[in-house]
Structure formats: C-alpha cells, structure tokens
Image (cartoon, rainbow, N blue to C red):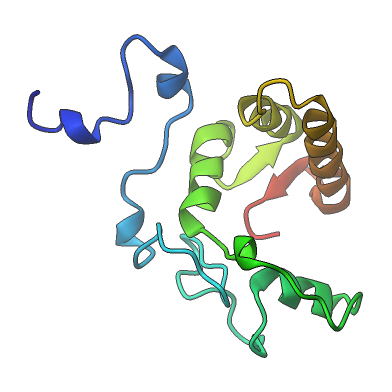
Length: 148
C-alpha cells in the first residue's frame, strides 16, 4: 500500500466515490468534526454553533422544537446528537451547483444516494421530508441554503 492510500476518499473501481466527494479538510474549520455534538450544531461558517441562543441543556433537535413551542417535554434518545461531519459531507457530496446551497435536483439526488436497500417506506418518507423542507426553506433562487 502506498503512502496516502489508507486515507484515499476515491476508489478507481467505484465511480460513485469520485462523483460524491467528501470534505477532507474539516479540521481546519471545526474542532473534531467527527465527534457528535449534543448542544450545538457547528458548521464551516459557524464553528461554535449559532451564537445568541441558549441551549438550556437540550439537544439541537429539542432546541428547534422548543423554539417553535411544540412539545416542552420532548425526550429524545442518544441518536439525536449532531454530527458536523455529516452536514459538511452532505454539502460537499451533493451541492455541486453552489457549495452552500442545494437545489431540488441535488436534494433528490441526495435522497437517492442515501437509500437503504428494500426500505420502500423509508425511501418515500425521506423524499417527503426533504421535499417538505425544500418547499418551506427554499430561497428566491430555488435552493436550500446551508444556513437554514
């Protein structure tokens, strides 16, 4: 094995690895991007998460729900921690037109690329969730910004 092969992000015989590039320099912007965050949702533009909003000891999802005042007693499991590397990889892989925006086509390609085999209900639910987000959060140019 040659030097650097152990961290190669593309495999010559798997074209999808070249099509869906991943970020390899996230540590420049976010401290330990592979560590799950319970209280903050950092990204390249906001490495310490969004400033000015107290976390009140809640996970990122609980903070969003509380902001919209849906359920005050929401209790979620450990799976609700935020992984900065996943957000960054989503934009690196699929935001090909503009680096910080996902078009409807790119969102659709993302749902196609993240499907689990034979999970037909999951496929439909994922597309429905992302289409709903698109129609709620799209800007005037018809794309969803990273900052939304």
